[in-house]
Image (cartoon, rainbow, N blue to C red; front, side):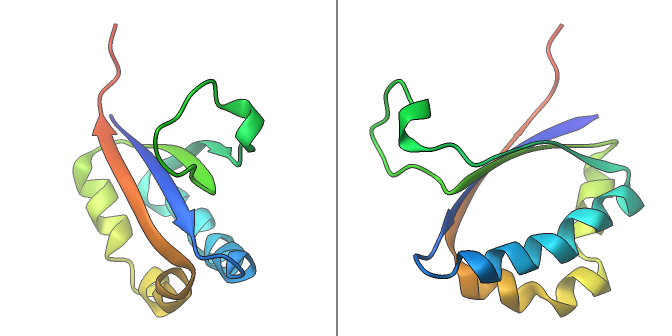
Length: 101
């Protein structure tokens, strides 16, 4: 099992386009044994401290394997609306990890 944390920084005024991308993308996770565990849109008051820009959304996902994640990113259906992601997201961070006991 792999875990991914994605911090997403959306272009101002492009939030609606980002939401469209999410409407297409999130349901595809299940086809690749993926799960969106948390989808968080915190406001500034939720942060105790920070030194950089605050992300628009934070996603915490899991996949059974790295191969499942890679196959998800290559999905032809997802690629057909990837332009929405490219138009709305300025940048994002993806952190990959494993569950600790």
